[in-house]
Length: 208
Image 1 (cartoon, rainbow, N blue to C red):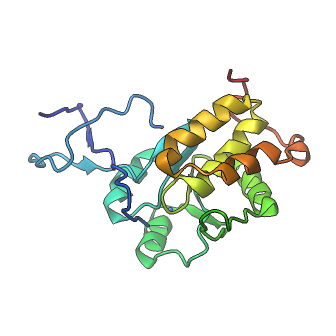
Image 2 (image 1 turned 90 degrees about the vertical axis):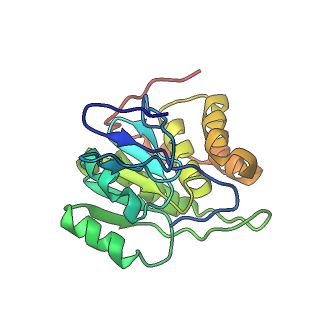
Image 3 (image 1 turned 45 degrees about the vertical axis):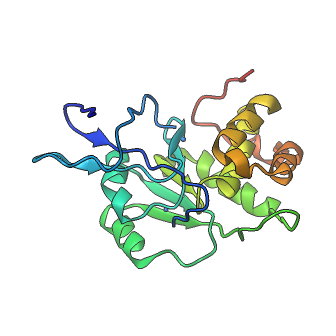
């Protein structure tokens, strides 16, 4: 079974529970069979784990690796926002440098319930970067694109005046079986008042 377009084939990166990966939903992403043989002249474009389009010029994912670099080049990124505290991998730094991509890093320690401490100030500063159109197109990522990324995107949705039901539905689609009540509580209680003076450069319609 094979699906092709004129210019590229995409293989979505599948999130296998228990797997680990280490910088939005892509609209109309066409699924293909992973492991499909590459035909002569074809270039394989592999999105990072949990890749999606958040809004115009804003994407989300798990930590990209070298297999994803060709795909990331198609996004023409200007910035990458990493929510992991560990030093950025050398190969990834070289990729960013070669492509003129700026790295913003707001380290948030990965944790499991009930010992979860999401720093509100860090999320607020990260949101300022996301809201700045001069940083677009921008990719937001953590390790697997679930919890830390989900919290940041959830707070962004509040700024976009989404209802909480829709915010939580989106969070749960990415977190799946790993959904955390503490993350959703953080999003619900997050105070957006200090950010409302900042311009939203993308759609800001209420989703119900």
